[in-house]
Amino acid sequence: MPIPADFAAFDIDGAALTVWTFKKSGGAGGTAPNFAGRWIATDPALETAIKDAVRQRRAAIDEVNPYGLLAQNNETSALSIGANETYADQMIAATADPLPQRRATTLAHIQNTDFYVIKLVSNGNVLYAARKTDPSWHTKKRRAAIDALFRDETLTLEPAPAFSLSAFVDFFIFGGTIYMLDKGRFESVLSYRQAHANQFLTLQAEPAFVAIFSNMAPLVAHIGTNKIQLRRACAIEVKGHFRDVNFMQRLRQRFQQYHLNIVFDANGLIVPSPETCADIMTALLDHRLSSAFSEAIYDVPDAVAVA
Image 1 (cartoon, rainbow, N blue to C red):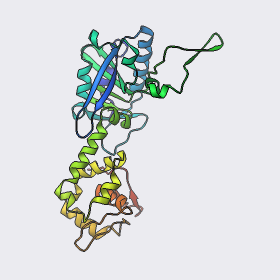
Image 2: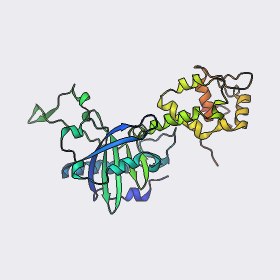
Image 3: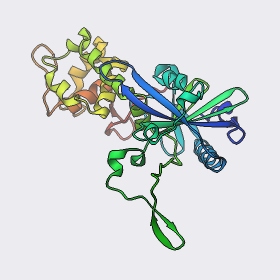
């Protein structure tokens, strides 16, 4: 669908701008992350450059598609998800007021931050543009670099560290919706990948899922902490085909016809192994499809039903 009209019409040039930097802690083992934010004073020249960059990134979005565990966007599209489905509310709350005590006044307040947020306020509406920080913000990664400037035809030492504000945006937040341009960075900043890991733990404990396997350990090892495999496992849980008795019966009857490398025991239970786990996940995602036209069999990145 096209970019929402109110998002597209937000007055970036006329908005009041504040830059917030955040250090993130926690977020593992099912706990919510903690966002410690500080705002940074900016001069008019930098604010103009930032607004230009934010405007260009918004203008690059031609269409918006729903976020899905396996969905991907391209350079002219964004994926959307409700902000209330993430930890974004904690980040938003931290930027509520640029109080004097929350101002960045020392170098230590800026260094080693995890991400920064550009907050734009216009006519009572707020647009947030977030970006994960690059190595210029991290002291350990700067130790191997010497900061220099080219001035008066000479390369000279720059004693003050430089911090890079990217011309790109990882995700926007506007009107209660997140519009992500970089899915992986969005998941990293807001600890959404950890939510996948927690969901996979829940899936492992679901009796209906456990009941289709003779031994689930090889599949758990195959998925591990790999972010792509965790997304697939969560998509399996959301789709829930394993809960459908008829789906599972047809899988047992037709897996060879669809060239799936799956082993069933005498009781009809799936017997996972390192060699079969990939095809097991493909089957449970319902991603092995047959064309009625070419009669060829395909794997698809995502299966969306057509009405």
